Image (tube, rainbow, N blue to C red; front, side, top):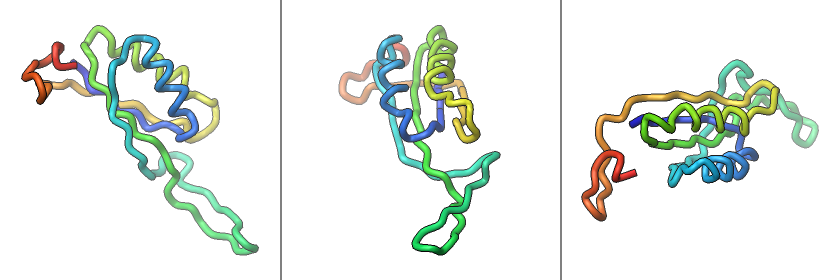
Length: 112
């Protein structure tokens, strides 16, 4: 099993969720996060005063899938979340040792 963690632009969340559902992803965890990368924030003007926005809002998706579906999920997120502008996000893929569904006691792939 693989855990895919993706940080994407907030307005892309619904589009990414729909695309992942279409390829068979049955669940994900979503969190609102703030961070910076290459773009390292930006400046904005509010009521005539300029101020720095050091952390940019993002959405963090955490998805655990069977090994065979991982590349498809990464490709789907990449294609759907890409705008071609700086700050599109990052995707990380990690091995998952064990998964357990609390309600039924199912483990590993059956728990997904």
